[in-house]
Amino acid sequence: SASATQGTILCNGGTTTVNVTATGGTAPYSGTGIFTVSAGSYSFVVIDANGCSTNACGSISQPTTLTANSTHGNIFCGGTTTVNVTATGGTSPYNGTGIYTVSAGAYSYTVIDANGCTSSVSGTITQPSGLSASATQGTILCNGGTTTVNVTATGGTSPYSGTGTF
Image (cartoon, rainbow, N blue to C red):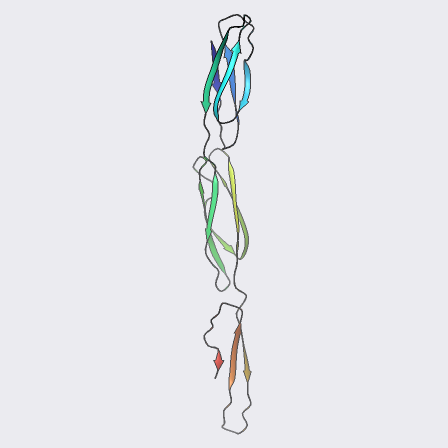
């Protein structure tokens, strides 16, 4: 008679061990011992000293793949925005999820599940260049007269209000 005692796969794509033992028949046995296996079905053949054989079979499951995700807001006029880090798969609860306040530039966060499996997510927050206004003025030729001022803008996000000839 052969039996198998299997471990647990903690992270998707990992491995565990199966300990195959035998009783009865005539010792010594071949096919017994500790074997490293991936998720799925397994079958080990155990043969005794007289050539009698039996199988030790089973199946090992694994958690789904841990995946970290993020969504983020926009920065419109400098400052900061938020990145919302979430996770799916693996084994909850998760560490490293939540809402983080960030400035423009690259970000990276790592989520760790209850079994110590990790998944990282990264991205880049952009922002428009700084808004700058300039004015070009004419000359008043006579006392009490008028002239024009041309106001223009660069940077920021067009269209602009408050520009033009005044």
